[in-house]
Image 1 (spheres, rainbow, N blue to C red):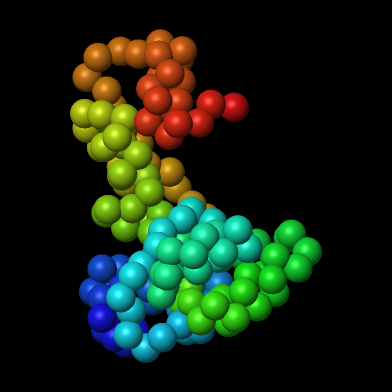
Image 2 (image 1 turned 90 degrees about the vertical axis):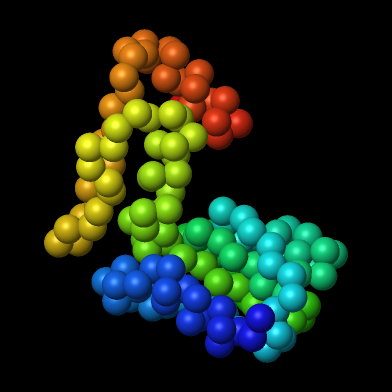
Length: 157
């Protein structure tokens, strides 16, 4: 796939959500890689270790939910330096993915086996409004925590 075809595809997938959020802040393509994308890697966050792993796997483009975090001094610069060195592109898509029908909230609801989605997550006047789902059968808090832990393979804090 050509990198411009990839961008066209993201516009088809996310539609108006890309217009709602600022490019560069909430999504963007750092086009440090080849124009022809043959292998894509995925991660939640980009870090120097992720870039090195991608280079080892001969990845052309890394797709993440978050950009390199600015609040960790030097993280973004280090990631960009490695991406350029290894000639790997990076596309991150944050808030558009949070609110997409196939995005983070609805995907979690599906994995948790929520029976009915009453409200999907959405963005309104600069604030995030969370999704709301209902289970047909009651769960204790401990049962919900166990389900979340099992699905995410992370302890609930």
